[in-house]
Image 1 (cartoon, rainbow, N blue to C red):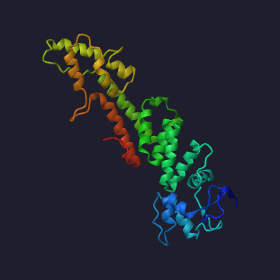
Image 2: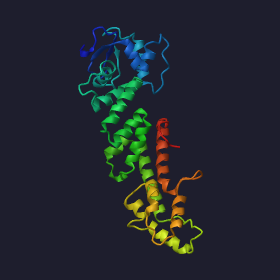
Image 3: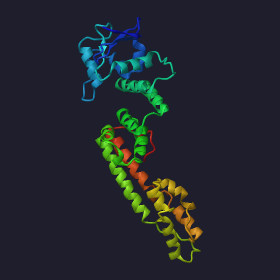
Image 4: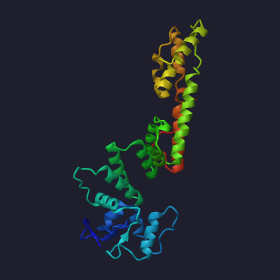
Length: 316
């Protein structure tokens, strides 16, 4: 029965065993263990038969139920609490190392180690470990959009889901490989494909349907003024159409730049009033922000499907 050379403390009080086939043993301290894991804190202190009823989601609780029914309490190697096989010895070691030592040579763990801490912390309901691993992964900047989306779904990080989905909206759906589709998952992939199609339709409708001019009292030729505005709007070289279709700028960016677009001989006050009229009001959102609303709706639906609270996001 191999004991970990660094994480089997001679004066430890709880013995844990990796269940992935490596049969590695760790001897740790009960107090810090319970502090680091809500699951350990709750279930190690439950008297028999006070174990909660099992549901289909309760993989960790199932493990504890089995351990307790066998009389395993972690007091010796023979009675070690054996973690389930979905947690590898490397992942367990990363979490124990974080909980009891945290003396990485580089000051912080590697990205791989942070992901292991995140996975084990999530399984054992260790909020400090989850927050720590998330901070390390955020700081590393090495996760691509698909990785952030998958991890966001797996661990309930609404901000990661939103940021990743926003980034993937700029990647044509046909450019994603079969491996990308499999990693993203069918629900998120379909949401991405549908939202990209909706945004494309919204941009085309907006590009070829200029809004009406809000004429000022001094405007003496409404027809000419409207024509100059429409010519600017539908210009494939430097108009709104070009910005939407060729440059693929978000509508909110175009809205901020609209007042500097050249409109030939259009009345300046008409131009100003029309640009101002396209901004958000108390009663309505600008037509130039329609695509952002489509994306936000898709993200809200994905979060709701995954049961992830959107509290950290500003999505109405």
